[in-house]
Image 1 (cartoon, rainbow, N blue to C red):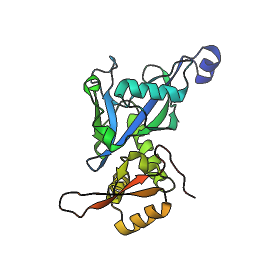
Image 2 (cartoon, rainbow, N blue to C red; image 1 turned 120 degrees about the vertical axis):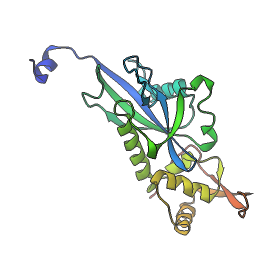
Image 3 (cartoon, rainbow, N blue to C red; image 1 turned 135 degrees about the horizontal axis):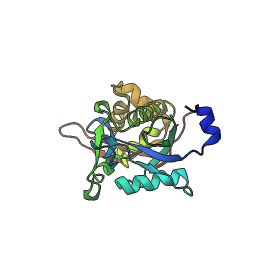
Image 4 (tube, rainbow, N blue to C red; image 1 turned 180 degrees about the vertical axis):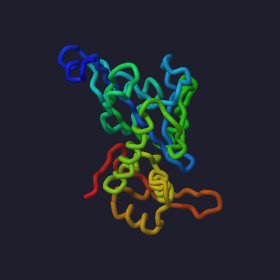
Length: 228
């Protein structure tokens, strides 16, 4: 049997490059991820998978991720960031496939739009309750969440998961959903207001019988600031 070194030197390699996208949102108090039924005929059970597809030889990676996401889920014009490259030789059962993973963040007012009739095979799933996914997609989701958790400490990444206007309680619930735990209310508000990246709209929102809460807006929609 030929060794790997001999194969590398004597036979051409068929290498495929793909992009897979972890789409996060916070809904029903939990961090959720967008998944689809994988269409592969070689997998009868059609396991749940991330949106993704092969990159054409003339296509930029970022563009491939954007186009694939829009075509498979209907998601467009959201925050999208490259995450990591997964290239383990045995990650795909039929060929050598290297995937460049991305993660995208969807605000709550866009969540209901996703899963329209033409995307009926797409749905939201709570990250803490995820079961087995296609190939190494569960590993990709875990790494994407870890990246998101890490960036909470030094950036305004969480604001990409908010509506245009929000209360401080709604923002705190975003942080808590990502972290999977509770935060001290007073310390959280002190830290957020000290960032100086949000502004009071002068309006209020009432939830049930609770006192009206001030509404804020993020000063730089679509942009992530890195804290000093």
